[in-house]
Amino acid sequence: MTQVEKLILEKLDGINDRLDRLEVRMDKLEARMDNLEIQLNERMDKLEARMDKVDTQLNEKITKLHVLVESDISKKIDVIGEGHDFLDRKLDQALMLAGRWEKTTLEQINLKMAVDRMRDNLNIA
Image (cartoon, rainbow, N blue to C red):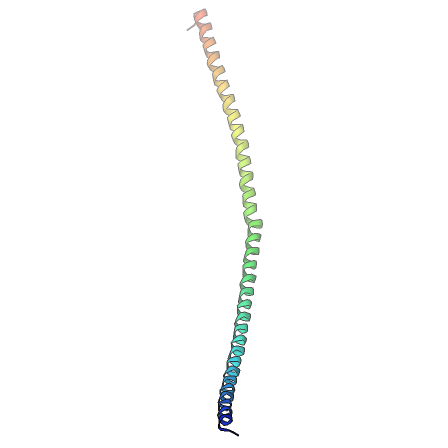
């Protein structure tokens, strides 16, 4: 073998050594990436579980609020509405009575004036 061939073989051996070291480093990097992927998947699973739990809690709270609105608040609104209807009827009755009272008062004044005129005509004191 010639000197040049020996140099080429030495260089190739150096390149092979460097490639072997690079392959080892790549294997380590791959292992780290696999480990990171596992950790990320575990964290994602935990996060999804927490999100599911929060979603369930929110749905339960919304359901409770819906039930509260349907059972308590709707009934109270109905009671208030009935009270307003009752007050409206009472107001109509009161206004009708006030109108009658006013007419009666005017009739009384007219009758008194008529009696006064009759007295004046008859000269009764």
